[in-house]
Length: 308
Ligand SMILES: NC(=O)c1ccc[n+]([C@@H]2O[C@H](COP(=O)([O-])OP(=O)(O)OC[C@H]3O[C@@H](n4cnc5c(N)ncnc54)[C@H](O)[C@@H]3O)[C@@H](O)[C@H]2O)c1
Image (cartoon, rainbow, N blue to C red; front, side, top):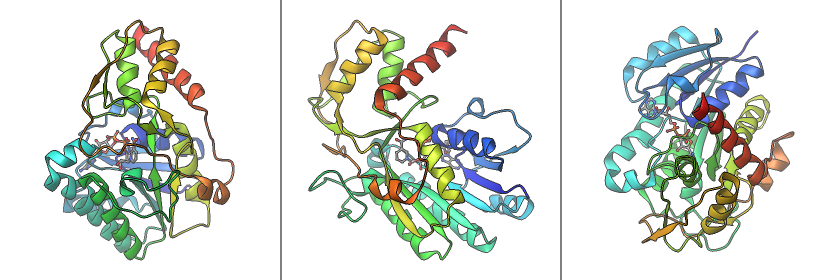
């Protein structure tokens, strides 16, 4: 029988790619999303997708569990900005901790077979050495990092079979471009529109960028797998400075301008690379897209979108 997956935040950037992948694999999908940052335009028109525009932080969502009887839950809905977590830690905690508890208690009550969720490299804080492994010390330096780490602790104690993924910086088509977005989405948008680009800090900070379709691939593998109750980094395992990223994208997009520089942002980690060995040893056939290839897909996706 067709298995049903409830995805919170399914209309967002990562959630919509996971939806596409799971549809390809024959699952039926139920999405709860309040569209605070996601959009229905991200979602395919399919009889196998049922959408509920609701906030996960309310009791109202219980009827969805009753009516839909999902087999699995992929929990992605969150406040996703480090900066916003510094500006409004209460909102961040409500969205990332309290809302997650609300979903977890319903998953427990309705016997969800597996709970998969998205945590972040932000749980590690300032790394003592790179790349960071799952067993590295967690010492978050932002409220977002604290709320994600706290969510992880609740997941571990809720007694539902679970997988936690700590993602590095995810990029790819459909990522919203605002000042809170990932740097690749910001560069992409600015370069397509020939707008100026500002880099926080000296640009020598290192990041580890993972392509969104690789995320969809590992999440779908983890759903099928017998592996439970584990936490995995998921990343490209490779670091690149923001300055180098800028140069690569400048060439790819034929962008004529140079970047200017601003002071570093509070709560930002200087260097971050996640070791993905455990995930690659555990799950088979995971996609591992090279940065240049992923950037070309992103550039061409938007180029098509802009000209139509
Ligand atoms: N993008 C990254 O680089 C990255 C890295 C590490 C972890 N993550 C995590 O992955 C998950 C998905 O992130 P994303 O980049 O796709 O962000 P996104 O903003 O595109 O997606 C989040 C989705 O959740 C929805 N949402 C937010 N609050 C909600 C609420 N209270 N009720 C219902 N829906 C709500 C939004 O409308 C949106 O569709 C998040 O948990 C995020 O913290 C993302």
